[in-house]
Length: 177
Figure 1 (cartoon, rainbow, N blue to C red):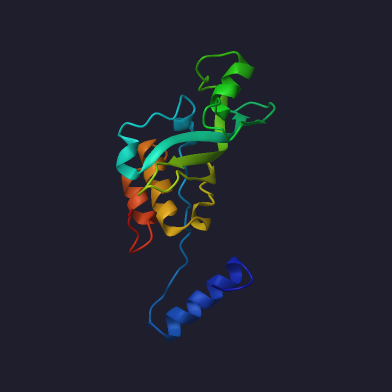
Figure 2: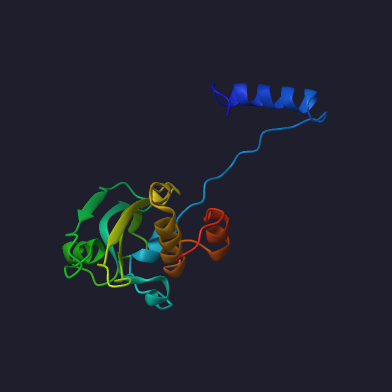
């Protein structure tokens, strides 16, 4: 890590290449992984069984919708954390009075996902939540290691991230247990 931005980073990389590895090094731009949040617009039904991961249910607690390609108003919909109530996407559909999101009109830009876990060994069922943005920013790293793995498995099951992307993001030594 080099303080000072791109110019200082480039200078430091050139010096490192010249004196340490004896070859020219050029900085490479690292593109953050983007999340395909639009996959969540028509519901949170996975293509596989949640129970394999110890997950009972997944809901959107909050959703930020932005107009696609046109000037317009972005809006945020917030839902109750109660798993028996409608999630943010259903509330947004009701507010827009449509049954399916119009792909050409609004993109899902940010969301708060709540994952309800199943009861394990006579304990009580729990839940955790995390924020994700289409730009690739998330709060998944703030979760416990077990919940990080579950969050990534949920995103993969909902086709928000690809399996290859998920494999690269799971911390070493992480396991669902």
